[in-house]
Structures are given as structure tokens and as C-alpha cells.
Image (cartoon, rainbow, N blue to C red; front, side, top):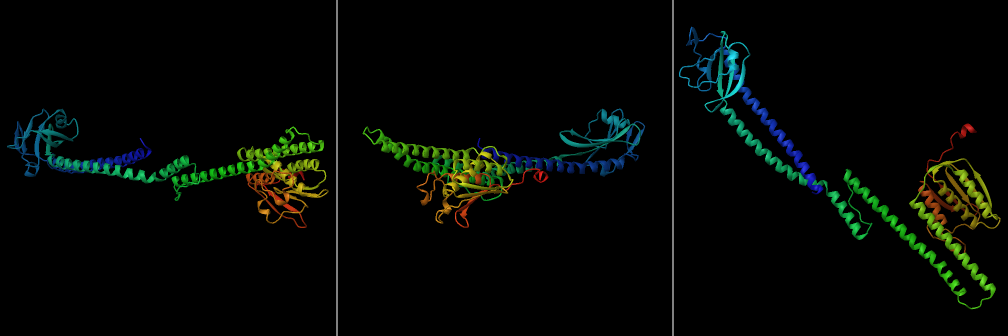
Amino acid sequence: MSFRARLAIAAAAAVALAVVLASVTVYVVVRSELRGTLDSALRERAAQVQNEPLRGFQSGDQVFLEPGPQLGGAPGYFQVVSADGETIRLPNETVELPVDDEVRAVASREREGYLSDTDVAGVHMRVITVPYFQEGFAIQIARPLTEVDHSLSRIRTYLLLIAAIGIALAAALGLAVARTALAPVRRLTGATEKVTETRDLSERIDATGTDELSRLAGSFNTMLAALEESTRAQQQLVGDASHELRTPLTSLRTNVEVLAGGRELPEEERQRLLHDILEQLNEMTTLVAELSELARGELEPGEAEDVRLDLLAADAIERTRRNRPDVHVVAELEESVVHGVPASIERAVANLLDNAAKWSPPGGEVEVAVQDGQVVVRDHGPGIDAADLPYIFDRFYRASSARGLPGSGLGLAIVRQVAESHGGQVTAEPAEGGGTRMVMSLNGRARKPPFADAAA
């Protein structure tokens, strides 16, 4: 059974139950009112005769008063019952009300009066039995329930008809409600099936409204957008990596073919080819390592913790000084704690330093500052052309002036990825007096280390 059918059945059942309960309540209230009116009339009549002497009846030594017309006649029946069960009725009265132990108990004062239903000659009767003021007798007054039963029968018929119509309307409304309520789910299902069939992640569904299903549709659109962006980035990464690997692979293959050609080469030429092969292998190794770094940063962000940004920068500075002794690094590091992945942050700082050192002239100076969750790296190189500045953090982008320098074009892309994954950003701008100034800002939760003021 489909979810729509279950929802429609549930809605119809709820409305049908409400209709049935309302019908039963109406019937009980009307029945109580109709019978209550009759019971009140019987009590009033009984009160009129139970405490006054009656005459007109002879029962042994007892003489009773014949009641007035209002106590008998067509609308009702009157009967006196003795404690031993003897009945005394009006003249020419042929209806004899049934007498049982309870009636005799009322006559003998063993119980209070009561109202009851009984059948007399096939007629449904309502009977009141009360003790008479004279010891040893009880009075019974009865009225037929024919009119009441007929009215209740018609009411039952009407209520059953109303309940049936209500249940049918409830079923129809349940289907309409289910169809309307599940419309966003149908659209969501259709979009999912279309994406599955076509692999087109640009598919979107209407997410207007503020209800739960609209929010679900919005979340689905957000998920599709994220998947589309991830797929696009993946395709771009694969395409860019293929393009970047094609050049060193072609050059490497050419050099290997020359060396394997079997012809005699001068030693100097041979050494040059071997040196080129090693350079190309190193370039490919670096490229593959940085591609792995990018992929790992996207898929496995790592465990975040509170880290000292100034200490991470100090370690990266030491490595730069060892690897690039011809560049002088000037550091101004203030204590700063950020929440992030230590290895990723250190790699980003090292990439900024490597980029600055690459563009610095021999003996040049690189300035590094850490403060309030920011790392600022400034070099004194030729600077970045204004046309290249918006693209230097893109993957594999290399300015025209950098084509002859070693590098994969991924170092600054990794810096941007690390900054954004930590809720921050990285920017580059021309530095006053020449060179480039790059600023990496991590998340806004940068703070001083605990007890720093106390230690001071």
C-alpha cells in the first residue's frame, strides 16, 4: 500500500471516527431528553396520588378512590399492587402491568420507588412504581414508549445516513488532502528519479513555503547544489591534473626514447637528458603530492583542536630558513590560538612562505607576522601583475612570469582551501614599496591562550 493511500485512510478514519462519535453523542442526548420528559410526567402523576386516599375500589376491607381522568385513560395506565401481589385496576381496564418481587418489595416498604421498562401485550412501556401512603400497597403508573421509540428510530436512521455520508466525504477529502500534502514529496521523488536517470545534478525542485516538506525540498536542492559543485570541482581537478601531467609526461617520454634509442650520445648530452628526467620526475612527484593534499583536505578534513598559530608559523619559518638559506625571514609572532587542524594550517603557512621565498631575490627579505588568528607574509619581489591577481589562488594557475619557475600551481590553491575550511579566507595585494602582501585569516574564534594575562 502506498504512503498516499495510508495517509488518505488515516485521514478518512479520523474524520469517520469523529462523525460516529458525534452521531452517538447526539443520539444519547436526544434519547435522554425524550425519555426524561416522560419520566418527569410519570413522577408528577405518581406524586399526585400516592399520598391521598382513593375510593372506588373494594379490596377486602380497603376502599380506594378512583383517580381522575388525568391519571389514566389513553395516555397512561394506573394500577395498585398489594404486598402479596394482588392488583387493583380502573374499571374496564384490560391492561395488567407485570408484578414481580421488586414491585412487592416497594409495596411492603422494603425498597424505594423506581422507574423501569417493560413490555405489555407487545407494547413497550415505561413504568413508575412508588409506595402508597397506606401500608402494604404500591402504585404503578405506566405510559407507552411507542412515540418515543418511533422518534428515536427515525433519529437513528438519520444519524446513520449522516454518518455514512460523512465517512464518504471523509474518504474523498482524505484523498484530496493526501494528494495535496504529498505533492512536494512527488516532486522530490520525480527530481530524484530524474537525477538518477540522467545524472544531471542541475535539477532543482520548487521549495517555496515554510512547512517541513518545503524545508526538505530546500535541503534537497542544497544537497544537489553541493554535489554539483563537488562534481564540477572534481572534473575540473581531473582535467587540470591531466593537462598539467601531459607536458612532463611527454617530455619524459621523449627523453627516455632518446636514451633508449641505441645511438651514441656525448656524455654531456647524456647527463643533460638524465638531469631533465630527474627534474621532470621531481616535478611530477610534487604535483601528485599536492593533488593528494588537495583531495585529502576536501575529503578528510582531520580532527580539529585548539592550536597555537604562532608556534606553527615558527616551525614553518625554520624549515624555510633551512631550505632557502639565501632568503632572510623576519618574524614577528604574537601568541594566538585558533581552532583547527594543525597539519593543514602548518602546510598553508609553509606554502605562503615558499611562494614568498620563490619570488624573493637572493639575499632578499620575507616578513612574517602572526596576530589575532592572522598570518601575514610579505615579500620584496617583483610583485604580481594586476591581471593575474584575481586568479593566483586558482588550481594550476600560473602567471606568465612564473611559467619558467618550478612549481605545480597548487600551492596557493591549498592555502585558500585550508583558509576556507577553517571559516576564513586568504587575500593577496601589492605591498607598499614593491612585492606582494598575502594575508590568511582563520576562523573568527581566534583568541589568546588561557592564562596568558596571568602568566604575564
